[in-house]
Length: 248
Image 1 (tube, one colour):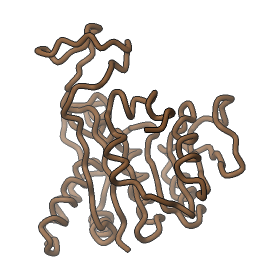
Image 2 (cartoon, helix red, strand yellow):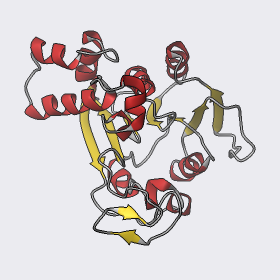
Image 3 (cartoon, helix red, strand yellow):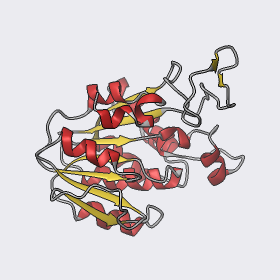
Image 4 (cartoon, one colour):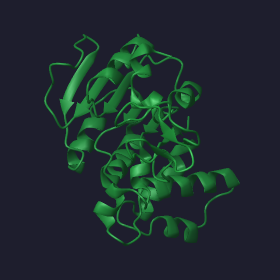
């Protein structure tokens, strides 16, 4: 494991790294786009992991002092809540082979990036929707958007698409209409995803994290599924990511 990822919550809390090792591309010669730069460690890892790739980091913030500077990296200010900005961004990046969506984690933003990102990806490209658990009805960010009602999100749509693809027969009009029953994805959007997506792999952590994201402790109450600081260790809406492969 890269030392950069070993200190990331992708590793010690979510446990994504082994899953990514199985499903990430082995080599990229085109472009990579990551939504959400944070401290820049993912960009540093991408520079090391894909030495022949051109990397774009998209964030609502301007360039921060701790972000890595490299000839292969370009930073772009983008508001994921502004759909036209997202669409323009992905359309203007050539040879997109990998998109990692690790930005605001707002359910609507996840859906917006998925729709436009999948269309911009090269055939055979990879789309990673990280921390998709925020689109689960039990998560606070889901409740912030939908309140006590059920909403349509990228999580529900992708799980539906995965089920239909696994069945290995064309989706019916009724099934497409049922998936499109919401505000994030229209019938045309769902139909397009079904035509674009070759495979969907879903990860959800089912073991204890290595350490607590809040306090760093490993003093866990294994019967209550809590850290000593009170953090839930096995919440139903936590540690989910999805890797989508575009058809060739």
